[in-house]
Structures are given as C-alpha cells and as structure tokens.
Length: 149
Image (cartoon, rainbow, N blue to C red; front, side):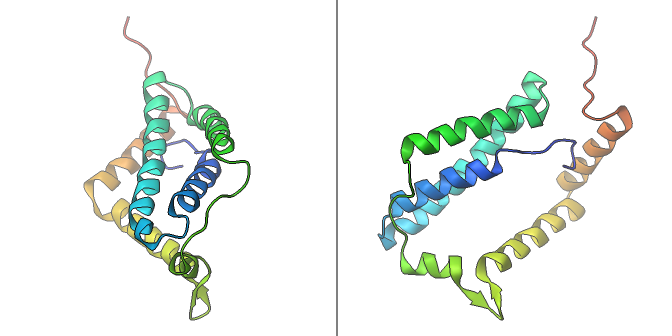
C-alpha cells in the first residue's frame, strides 16, 4: 500500500502454504520447524516474484497479483481438493491457544506489526520505502518514467 500497490494473492498464498504445511507435517513433530521455515520461505518467494514481475514488466501490482492468485489457487487444487494431513498438538495449540483472552496467532500478528512499524520508521530501508511512496504520489498513482528517446 505504501508504494502504490496492493497484493490480491495473499489469501491464496495462505491457502497453498497451509495445505502444504498440514500435508507435509502430517502429525510428525520433527517436521514442524523445517516445514514452517519452508512455507514462510515459499510465501516470501511468491511475494518477491510478484514484486519482480510488477517492477520489470511495468504492470500494476493489482493485475500481477490477481494473476498470481489464480495460479496459486490452481496449484492448491492440484495438490489437494480438500485439506490434507494433520498438524501436531503443539502446532494446533498455537493456532487455537489463548493468553489473557487473546489468541496466540493474534498476539504474534501484533508483534509482527510492531516489528514492521519499527522497521519502517527506524531504518534507512524503511525510510526509503516512504520516499518511494511519496514519489509515486507526487507523480500520480503508479506512474512510470517515460522511456528514453
């Protein structure tokens, strides 16, 4: 949003990675850490691919991520037509557990929001993201420089 784009493939990325996670863990506690690392890396790779396609092909992120959402939904359906596998009790406890009446997942989300906020407001890279956003706003929404003659 800061840089003038929106990712419509987030939901299907979650669908794909959650199906992969439950299918690959399949109740084996030894698989939790490597599978979680793997699906987070897969989600990051999908996000990087969306960004690269949008940047290098000069296509609005709305269009790129809408197409990616269709591709990911197809991959999820190829992998399984219904949820597969099972997760360990500890993994399930994280999904449904509560601390002080708040869900563990919700608390993790709040912690990640705080970390992203600190990153955006306290690092050079975060400030550069705001500069890109301000430049795009000043030029008009999602304006690209005209090609050299």
